[in-house]
Structure formats: structure tokens, C-alpha cells
Length: 233
Length: 196
Image (tube, rainbow over all chains, first blue to last red; front, side, top):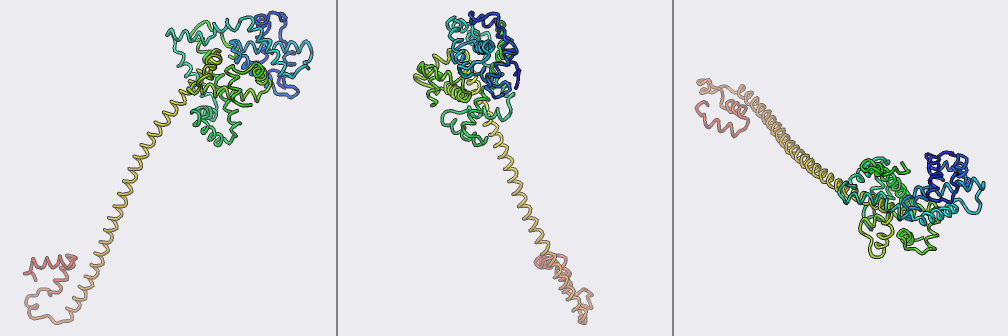
């Protein structure tokens, strides 16, 4: 079993009491995630099958996307807050048997979201969202954000394996019928079923998007002072 | 589960119960989460390609584009589209160049092949001519030898004895030997009758 997937424990520690007190003031302010609690969470999320930390990372990613779909700006923070609450509950109770790990995480995420919305954080954060802010700067003519984006895309495509880059560029090109036909041909070329190809393309695009978002974040901070670093970097 | 339901979920037009179910599945089920992402990528691409219309477009604009993550995804999809177009354009341009170079090479090779064939034909003609001339030369030498032998067997005529000139047949053979063909020899002889 992996006891410390890259960055997981540090992420959990980063989003400790200060984050919780900001988002959910009712939680115990003095509770700090411990190594033991984190290990306990990893085991519990794996549900008896050692995933080497992958279970934690997958759950965190799904939680981030859940909060993104709910249009939260602090999706990363909220996902960490959710996992910290689960961790604390596990440490307190020793075990959670009322629901499966995934179901329990969903229940906690719902509460975290409700608190977030109740506090009006969404509206507040949206006003300060880097994308909106960048858009405002862009319209004022101070910077052109499209070129850095294209530079980041080139760079991130270059970081992919050659067959991954080829697949992602081919898979998402074309429109409607042409796209369907192209995907059928690609599946045959790669020797995959259409479903397996779509999963592979989806994962590569997720990787590409994560890379581009990191790259853009770095560039934005270089050109526009005052933007805080993102949690992924 | 149909993609259409997932699209409605992504643009915020599902019922509360549907939303609750899909929320839970998106967190609890990795396979479902991946499929949802795949549908999301295609939805964003469709928007960027201008394929969305009507209520779906309205919902997408109102719901999906109101989140920073949604905006970022649309930006990336646009960049991918531009990149794909420029890639296709450069591929087409390079294909044209390749075709042009291939056409020039083909023309050059065709010219060389034709030249080669022409030269081979000329060389064959020359070889045939040479062989014919050699054959002719051998025939004439044989004829000359026979005539010389015959001439030695016959007694010389008084006229020949007086003039001490070689016999006419010899002169004719010499002429044939020197001028290779009978026509040229005749021409030569008609121009210089006094020597015979």
C-alpha cells in the first residue's frame, strides 16, 4: 500500500484548520490532519484493495469536478475540505459503516457545498475569478490572453507521448458526421473498441487541460501581479 | 444511460432527483465520471464549432459558461480547434509541395528514360551498319582474291603487256575495296575513266 501518494498528504495538511475555519466555521478549529488519519483515509477509500494512493487521487479529482460543475471557484479547496472532514470523522469514529466510501464522500460534499453557497462565497469568489478578471484586463487592452494559451497548448502537447498527442488532435477534430467517421477509423488504427478509445481520449484531454491550466496560471502570475498560485502547482 | 441526459445534467436542466442521482454517480462511480467527462468534452467542442442551437445553446451559455472552469474549458477547446485547423492547413501545404516535387522528378525521370531508349536505338543502328559493312568488306576481299587468282592463271593480253597497267577487274576490285559500295565505286570510276 502506498502511504503517501505524491502531494496527497501535503495537500491534506495545507487545507487544514485555516481552510476549514474559512469555509465551515462550525468545525473543530484545532483539528489538524495527522499522518495516521491520512493513512486511515487511504485504506478506507481503497475499500480493501490496495490502489497505491490512486483511490484517493481519483476521489479527489471527482470531487473537484463535482464542485466545478456546481460552479464553485474554489473547487480544489472544497474537495480538500470534504476529504478532511471524512478523515476527521474516520479518526473520531474509527470506521464509517453507514455508507460506502464513495457515497459517504458524496454526502459530505453536499454539506460542504451547502455551507459554501450559504456563505455567499460563490458570488464573492466569482467576482474575483481569475477568468473574469483576465477578461476585464483583456478588454482594456493591457494583455492578449490568447497567445499565452496557444503557447501553453503547444508546450503541453509537446509534453504528451507522441501517440497521445496524435490521438488527441485527431480524436477531437472535425464536426458531426466527419468526427464520427474519423473516430471509427482511429479506433481501427489503434486497435481499440470505440468505447475504449473514447475513454483513452478523455483521459488524455483531461491531462492536457490540467497541464494548460497550470501553464496559464504560471503565465498569468508572471504578467499580472496579485494572482495567488493554484493548489495544483 | 443516454448521452442526452448527461448533456442536460451538464447544462443544468435536469430535475432535482436526476441531478441528485447523477451527482452521486459522478463521485461514486469512476467509469461514469469518465463517461461524463467524455460527453462534456464533446459538448464543449460542439459549442465551439457552433453546433449548439435553441434551448441547449441558451442553457449552455447561462449555466455552463457562468463557471470559471467552464470558461477555461471553452478557451482550451477553441485553442485546440485553431491548432487543428492550422495543422491541417500546413499538412495540405506540405502535401502540395510534395506533389509538385514528385511531378518534377517524374518528368525528369521520364525524359531520361526516353533519351535512353532513343540512344539505345541509335547505338543498335550503328552496330547493324558496322556489321553490314564488315560483311560487305569480307565479300569484296573474297571477290578480289578470286579475281586475282583467275588473273594469275590467264596469260596477259598484248594490250595489258604494253600498258603494264593492272587488269581492269583488279582496278574495279580495288575501287570497290576503297569505296565500299558499288554505287560509290561506279561514281568514282565514271569520274576518272582515263586511269583504267
